[in-house]
Image: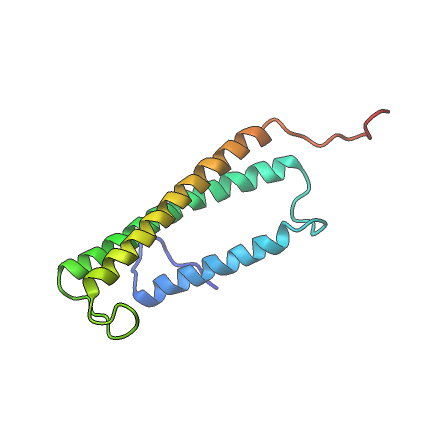
Length: 135
C-alpha cells in the first residue's frame, strides 16, 4: 500500500485507504512485538516504539474529534438521514449518540497518549544487563 500525501488531495477513497493502511500497520506491529519475533530486542526499542505510539494516539484523538464535528455539521445542515436501524428517521438522535461515542473514544485516546508517555518516561532509564545477575 502506498501512503497518501498528508497534504492531499483528499478524497473519501484516499481517506479510507489511509485508515486501512493504519489497520494493516497495527497488524504488523502486533506480530513484530511478539516475544521472540525479533522485532523488539532491548528496552531502548520499547522506548522508541512507545514514542511513536504516543504520537499516533494524539493523532487518533484529533481524527476522532474531527469525525465527531463532521457528523454534527452534517446534522446541523440538514443533510443527515437515517434510513434504517434503531435510529431510522431520527438523525438528531443518531448524530447525538454518535458524537457521544466519539467524544468518549477521544477521551480514551487522550488517556492512551498520556499513559504511553508515562511508560516512555520510565523506559528512558532502562537497559539490558549484558551479564547474568549474580556473577
